[in-house]
Amino acid sequence: MITRDEIREISEVFSPEGCALTFYYQPATPLNKSHRHETILVKDLVRDAISQAELSGKNRHAREDLRKILAMSEHLQNNGKRAKAIFACGHRGIWREFDLPPVLKKTSLAVNSRFHLKPLVPVLEKRPRVVIALIDRSKVRLFELIDETITERDDFTNIIHRKGDGFKGYDAGHAERHELNDAEVHFKTIADQLLSYIQRQNIEKVAIGTHDELWPEIKPNLHTYTVNRLIGQFRVDPKVVTPLEVKDKTEQLLAEEEGRRKLSLLREVIGEAGGNGRGALGLRRVLRSMEMGEVQALLLEDKFASPGTQCTNCGHVDISMTHSCNVCGQPTIAIEDIADVLIGRAMAQGIELVYVASNGELDRVGRIAAKLRFRADQNTAIKQTA
Image 1 (cartoon, rainbow, N blue to C red):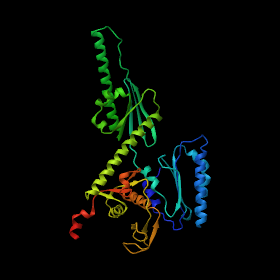
Image 2: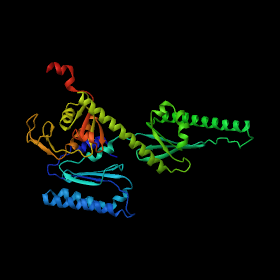
Image 3: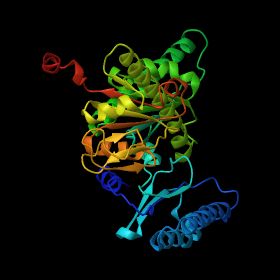
Image 4: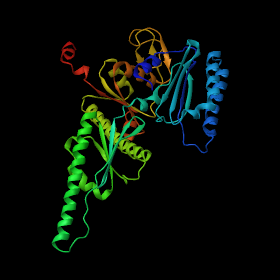
């Protein structure tokens, strides 16, 4: 897995010769067991890049790195369900490989002056540790989902004593009430044990799997501490469901909750920006906030891309395609996509990166926004100086 420090180091690499190679491999659902379609896709991408490198006269190092990727294409399916990222620049002796969670948008390859980092944003988003409790009237199964791994932690059965039909009248009614009381005790015991486990293991999120008709009986017994971490309930038969099915259902709940969180954050940022508060919208405003150290979270839409320039002296980034820096007057270099520079700076400054799928609200403000820690122009000392 790639770390923030490694991304920061990679982001600082600049290749004037234009031979910084970035390769992302996202495993797809195979059309057949041979995975030939994935191999063919990679080969086509590499051969196109080799042809372009030869036409543009890029140095031999880029072509050698591309041929290494081509040689690897036959063996990528051996990576299992893991994605892969490769950053190479033969001119500077760089070859870095990383296995990643399979959350990339697609397999892609780019060769230019900087490594292409934007596809890494979904990978960098923190995945919470989730406990999943599968509950019915007689059984509880406990799972944990950590990153991409699902593990069954506990399995115990509490057989509820059930009487026969008994005699009619009083005896029958008494037996029914006794069974209901046993069920209530059962669900309360589970709620207590679940709370204890969550607190001991410092669990961040909780999911419950059960029959739909049991959920109204289970939910009232859950402790507030548990409910506050609950991402949802899904329908399942705890006795027969497989770990893979549990993982799929839990990840769906996580994706839905994360989507709601991002939409809420985006609307908060837009509202704050409109009220001259702690929000920045659009590339120019976000660049200024990054340089002022104001940014707490950077929101990038998946379609965001913008060329620009960067000063070779002070590092100032600008959307103006000028040959000299607007801040210090020194020479600038071209940037294919400003997003790659911003991601590196976010890593260095401890800024949260938030990847947003295509969204009309973010589209309207330039596909980039930021939540701010503060606004420097609202600092009293600065205002007095002004």
